[in-house]
Length: 269
Image: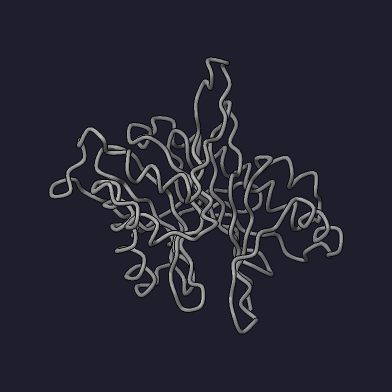
């Protein structure tokens, strides 16, 4: 567990704040992270898919795609992971016996955990896992190459990420769809678990759904608080504490601009 993270509130004041920590959540998700990574080491797609949701949102970046000078997202849904699980470690550079898996939690509460998985010296994932019908599953991810973890411009990127997430949060507070839309990648995934029915399920929100929800609501009486956990050279993670919900967002840097690529929220009682 990282003991300190960067807290960002209205006005972009920067203060250290303790991260949330739930031992049961971390104990449940840590072996799932191990299973996910070691499934690739063993070229065993069944292991990989055993811990992810059928609608996993796993998003990375292809820099300079097609030599165009432009970045695009790379999405790895479970069907793609099933193939990658067989072919990824074709050269056996990752050892089942000796390759390591690092799991570093940014945040953990009763039903949600956010952590960085470091797969030996090959790649990293920032994952969000949640509990659905009593079972833990990985639902959101942003990822990159291992050599992008260390960020010499981390402080500047943390501030840039904070600005983007604050704009997104304020858009929700003020019911401003254009502000919300300006911060997210066009096909970003925003989801939550419907928990007030006998059978829980992951619910996908489209841009039309978001626009309707914003138009139907009222401006918040209190501004949301934003906490940025991390910013690598490509990937970032943050939490929004709003009056009605806690929301976790993952970002990627695309064409020198930080954009939110997936979001997950839990209602606050």
